[in-house]
Image: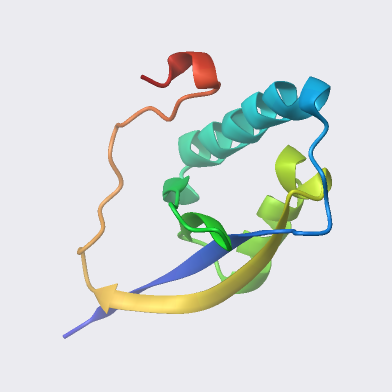
Length: 112
């Protein structure tokens, strides 16, 4: 059996950063737009929040660990210090995860 290679990246809450209320929605929207752009580019298959105090989100990339981390280090929420990143290589049976035409929201206004 062949295996496809992906990277899992965990967005870990940074307990040392207090989010400024006046900046939170702007940073969140820019964070979502960044993820949507990575998805549109084809390097991010899926991403979403976690209901967990420490792990706040998970992303699955088609790129290797180094490139995946580099792409998320440019994320506005990471740059604002909201998250630190943890990543690992992940393998699944070939064609288990196929890219879809799903559109990612680019702001909280698009989330129901």
